[in-house]
Image 1 (cartoon, one colour):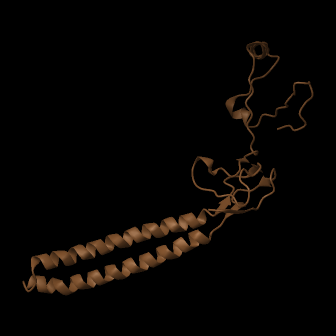
Image 2: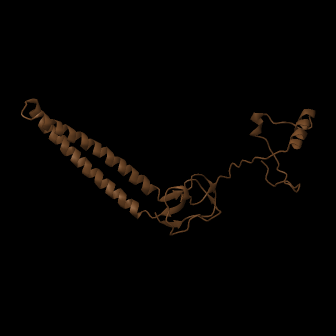
Image 3: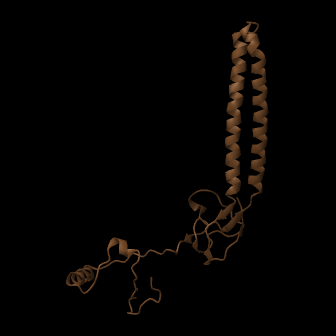
Length: 189
């Protein structure tokens, strides 16, 4: 569909479930109405086929009806039931498609810049990314440690100059991050 508007400030924090983009819902609303009408038609046809089957059952039992006519009535009732299921599936799909016109944040975090501008045609597929939401709480950081630094740490732990946290203590451990220029990052946790 056509991207109608962006509802967030680029680079701002967003909450999970917050509306980020609106895609023109009108074509999908029309598809939903058509699917509802198809379901109503299929249900009416199925009900008529069931009524016809109920009418011919006594006739088939008394041999006043050919086996072929009875089989056709049974097949019509079964086809009607299948058509109802198919129409229900199309209705579910139409509801899903209409729901996709409101693009919400999957997680809380920082939203990046919009990768599509208002008025752009968007479609499912590889080029469908509208923005990225980066989760920042909790924030996980991986550090590469050189072999020399690892040997120093292991030596300090072995000599008792440093204490290694046990797995259960890691959750509660307080750390300080020293930057490359020697200053300590102001947040501790």
